Structures are given as structure tokens and as C-alpha cells.
Length: 505
Ligand code: GLU
Image (cartoon, rainbow, N blue to C red; front, side, top):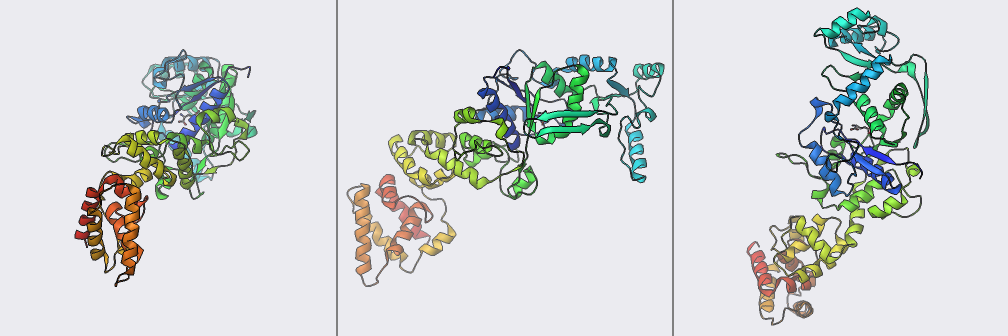
């Protein structure tokens, strides 16, 4: 590509990074990397009231965890900084003044009460109040007031905002890379506030100025900003700046397909909406804590609303960079399916070696110290075939490292019969007499034990032995081969577990 690609992800630190934001960041990243361009992270923190402590840090860490790190940011630095909008106010003021001087923006002194009054008044007449060409002359601003009066108000303590003077009759025509041709009549737009009475810019002003100064070539952002596109185009025109190209990506829909995936709709469906845990006292878990691998999350997110146009679904980040094609992003919302994410995770887990899995489990907080590294690797290689998440993987493996803490109630009911106690006691005796801890040997001896029992007077079935044995060793009826478990934890520990289970009968 001839053009120098520069894209940005521009979150507002009003809370943790939502997975929708993560996908926006990812699409920007993929687009930049594919074109040999630059991916910028800009913190849009001009709204002091909505700023949340720790959110900026969270966003940076979550992106880092996912491997979607920025080339230019508050951390990485860069020539187009500062990368935090709260540190760029002088730039906004300077460019705002240009707009005012050229007659594209004006001071407005209307109080909140006065505006409320107009709104109510219009409502009573069945109309909607819009602050624009239609009524700006009737309102209190530097267009309706004389120069002297305006200056007097500006010199005094009168609070004011600066509004964009939206043209009365202009058809704004532009093209979105995903949606195609977009046309908006300026007469329908309001004179948006560009600069607030608290001395800070609004999103629109800061965003356009920064995209220009940071030489952004493509703006790839969420669909919720599509209604702002016309205003942004007008702002570029007013400044006399070349517009970047725009791509508005579709919403992520809730698991039910109704409405967008929000914190609430996610909660309702038992689906996390954050990459990692958020909050101190009342911590909300994210995908990391669910045991989802970042590469699986990224793979899944990329497939939400985008596809390569063939059967391929499993991707590494590098492969995504290679195959990503912005024109293949769908304009329809994409439904969030946690089960599908788990499938992606299973596939990415299966690609890991036992050694890698061991490291992952350790950093997941699992205590694997009880067994040698070689043994752990053997266990993990056997367990990875059936684990969707690291949580599941540990669920399958923890019985190798610690006795069951609880016994699954439902399974317990299924496992216990009138013969359980007698069976387990003679099994204890048999195991105690073994002189080899070899899995093969244990398996053979248990098999023989079952065979003998079935021939006895009580005609004890195999399941009457195997189920309580598994309950004692694992705490539930699931898990890996029982001979392998007993051999790995050792005869002594196995006998302890069986005795422990007998006591609960
Ligand atoms: N600060 C905006 C947000 O949080 C950025 C929108 C944009 O990318 O232009 O969504």
C-alpha cells in the first residue's frame, strides 16, 4: 500500500475495556500490521466526570495480555504525543480559536435552565428542540448578540460553551469502508458543543483534531459513532483538513441475539464481558479468570463480524494479520456465543505442549508442586483432550495433586450402594498388599478384583466398585483413567483417600 497507514484505538477510561472495545482495538491492530503501518493507543479522557480510577491502566494491561500492544501510546511514547487527551488542551484551544475566527464556531451563553425551558416548550407543541440554524438566532449566543455584548459576557463570569455552526443546507456525502455510501442532510443536525463550560473539549472536537495531528489514515471504530460521522466530516472541512477514511464496525449482540452485548445482558447469560478481572472489593471476573487463553479470545473476537470467506476458523494472531481484510467485515451485528469461544479455547489448548500447559496452570494459580515436572507433563498431555478452559483442565488434574475437598452430591448418590463399604474395605486391603505402583499393574489388579467380586455370593457388579473408587480418588465420577491416577498419587495416598471416603458413608 502506498499510503502510510496509521490507525488508532481511542478508548475513554470510563471503566474497564469491554470485549467490544477489544475487538475494535484488534481490527485496528490487524489492519495496521498488515499494511506495515502504526497502531496508536490514545486515551480519550477529557470527560472528567466519567473518568474512572484504574481504567486507563486496565485498558493498557488488557491489550497487553491479548498481545495487541500499541506502537505509540502513553507507555510506548511516539512523535505524535501526548497520547492522553487531558494533556492536549492547549492544542484544542488553539484550533478551536481558528474555527471561531473563521466563523465555523460560536460562543453560546444559554443556561441549562433556559435550554430546559425551550425543550419543554417544544415538547408541549409536539416538537423537538434542536439548537441549530432554525433557532440559534433566538438563543443567547455570539451570533444573536452584538459583538460588544458578546465581549462583555466573555470578559465577565458568564459561563459559556462553544458550538459548531452547522450549515443550514448541505448534503454531507461520504463513504464508509464497511457500509458504503453515506448521505446526511446538515439541516437535521444540531450545533454540537465543541468546548464545554468547564474549559475542556468535547469528544468531537478533540477526536477530529487528534486524528488530524496524529496523521490518522483510517478511523476504524464502533458503529455507535456512525451518527457523528457527518459532524466530523463538517469539522474536517471547516478546518480545511483532509479526512481520514472511515470504517464503522457492527455491534456485538448479546448471546440471546436481542440487543447489544452489555454488562447486564452478559451477566444475564453468565457471560463475562471483560478480558480480565475488574474492580477491587467486588471483583468481576473476566475471560482470563475463566481460564480462556488470550490467543483463543483474540481468534474468537476476530471471527465476530469478520471471516476470511473460506472454512478456516483457527487462527494465530500472526495468521490473522496475514488474512485480515477490512472489506470482509460484515455490516450486520454479530451474536456473542460463549460456547463457541470455549471451542476455540479447546483448540488452542490442544496445540500447547504439556510443558506449556504446566506453565499456564502455574500462572493460573494452581499448585502443581506435589509432583515432578515430568509426571505433571504426562498428566496434562492426557487431560488436554477434554478441557475447554484452564479451569476445566485443573478440574481434571487437581485430583493428582490434592485429595478431593468435596464429593459431588449427585455423583455420590449414583455411586453408593449397600455394598460400598465392604467393597472399599477389601479394595483397601488389596491395594495395601501391592508391591508395585505401576499403572499397568494396578489396572490389572483392579480388573481381577472386579472379576472375583462378580463371581462371589453377592454378585457385585464392576460399577459398584469402580464408581465409589472414583468418588474416593477424584470426588466425582469424571476424570482420567483410575489406574493412572492411583499410580500417580501413590498407593499410600490412594488408601488414605479411600479410608477418608469410607468415613463419610
Ligand atoms: N473515545 C471514543 C470511545 O470511547 C472513541 C471513538 C472513536 O474511536 O472515535 O468510544
